Image (cartoon, rainbow, N blue to C red):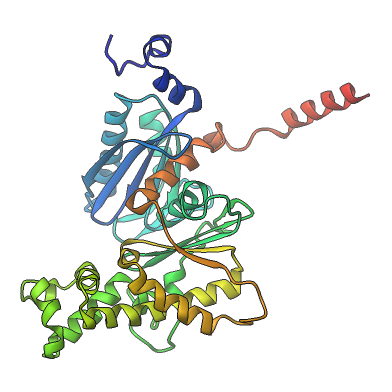
Length: 363
């Protein structure tokens, strides 16, 4: 028999660890980004049993759907899974079924869950990628054990997720957590969303790279290290290049990160004032800059938070799960969702019968 067979009896006899995974229920998580699709099989403890990585086919919804199906099919050959969670950068409806809008994936009112359920015959949950990452950090990462958590993801832009009382807060229409589009500077920099002065235009990865390229293009000799790291091409200066130069001690790169951190701290203070979380978690690629970013963020936060000195202050921590957070959270949300999700909630009648039986026993 193949070691990847799904014959449960044989697996119990051959591999106790595999038996444990089967008993607890593993799930597949998929994180659909603008350039890469990251996926993994995740067990009940948040451990990644296997990872896959593919290029994102952004030209059509059908091609992206096909990639998801191919990944799930491949992983199912080697793992017994019970559900699939898909995290996507975009607006997901309140039923976690339809992608209302995904700017980098050509999805517009796409009934993704129904299509995947039809093809995969598995339980499927569709979730916003930042929501999924917030759930992962709450369950298994930097905010484990905390019931009130806000995650801010610093990627190309800024996303976010909210966990309140141990429940993922999606908002009435499913699109809560779009922190990057909070108005920070009225009449400020133009944002891709159409507004001006959004937070992500000052603290996101694209903003950091834009500021660094503008600094280097000014002709200042202080940008020499940044230009060298980018091969002499201003357009090749990215947030990652800035972070690497800052880590090597370059004063200009450290200054750019300090400015980004200060903008980050202002936004975090606004979120703390509005939501009063126990923990603020900062994730995403830009957070890899570490204390060069976080120290000025915490300092500005302390000087900006309303009621400072007279109220408890949340902890500000860096996310722990890195690039795996999105698919780990998506997998866990799918694994723990209602089994009859595609058919709606369980009927009230069944609950009433159970309550009646319990009351009779109590008498």
